[in-house]
Image (cartoon, rainbow, N blue to C red):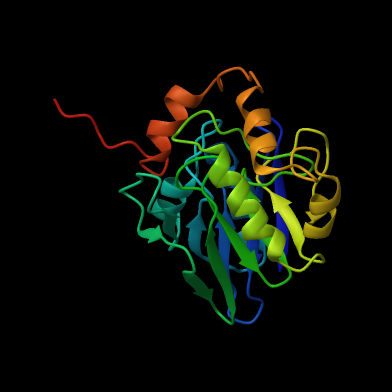
Length: 231
């Protein structure tokens, strides 16, 4: 079972994957405000949420991971490079997350942030902000590095079969899925671009600061549930 959710406010794409035999399920890049929608689908299909995974510590929304952990049996999983010490699992390159008869493989894809990862499941890859449809994530905060992002995309993601479906963490133009072959051929930031050209492009994007970054990043390092204040 596979379902894609879309958040209008942050243009975030969240993914639910479930093993239909065991009914165990995984969420990727959940949003706190949308927990009721996730739980409605989970309960309707009699699923058990066992993992809430993040592709990185997000700057534009607060994750639902911590709240989902308190409401379900889900463990939280965040890359060890993200500084999210409260996560149950510190994800590393080549880790395999199993649920029922299904498995998800972790690929370290730093560059958008120092701890960004992508997830491979069956014939598709969930790329977070590392690789977008006709684009890629910015590299000017959270220890981003354009050179590392270029290397990860070209040496890891672009070596997957062309038919691999690409499900990104965001899309701002109504698109929902791409493929590795398509991104290799027509992604304007990457197709026929050298590493130096890519780095130069990323250095000159001049994007505004994300509105929620000062709130979202600290909260997401606590899996969306800040520790109670003392006193």
